[in-house]
Image 1 (spheres, rainbow, N blue to C red):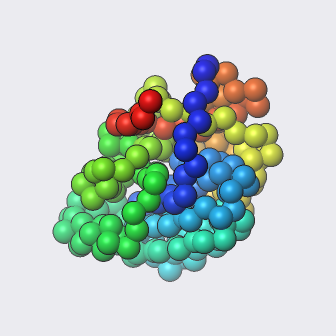
Image 2: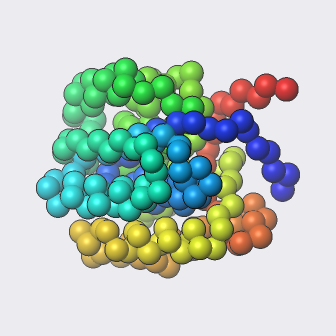
Length: 215
C-alpha cells in the first residue's frame, strides 16, 4: 500500500465516551506519534466515569501520554449508557471544548458505532469541529459493527505491545468483560496489519470521511 505523509501535526484532540475508548481506538497511534514528536500538544477528553473509572482514565491517560510535553487531560462524569438523555449537557461541554482548543487532528468514535454513547460523542465532535481533520476510531464489541476502514497506521512491534500492556494494567474494572483481553486487542491490530500490508503485521485503522489534500 502506498504511504502518504502529511505536514507535521502540532496538536491533537482525543475524545472518548468512556475511560478506555481512546486507548483502544487510537492508543497505539498516539504512542507512536509521541515517540517521534514529544512536543506534540495533546488534549485528552473522557466524557463518562464513576470514581473508579475516572481514576483509571487519568492513570491510563498519563501512562499513554508519558512522553508528551504538553498535555491536557479532562474527565467528565456523565452517566454511562445514558448519553442520549444527557445530550444538551454534553453538547455544552463540547462547545466549551471548542473554545479551548483548535486541533490539527481529532480522534473520535465512528458515527455508525452501535453504542449509543459512542454515537453521541461522534455526532457532537462533527458538530463542533466541522472544519477539522477527523479520524474515527473503532471499538470491538459484541454487536459486531466493525467495517472496512479507509486509513491505516502501521505500528512498530514495541508500540503494539506497549498498547496492550497498558490496557491490561490500567483498567481493572473491565477485566470481567469477556471481550476485554489481550487476544482481542492483538487480533484487531493483526487484522488491520494484514489489510494494510504493515511490515510489523500490526496496525490501527480509522474512518476518514473528509480529507482536504493540498497538491
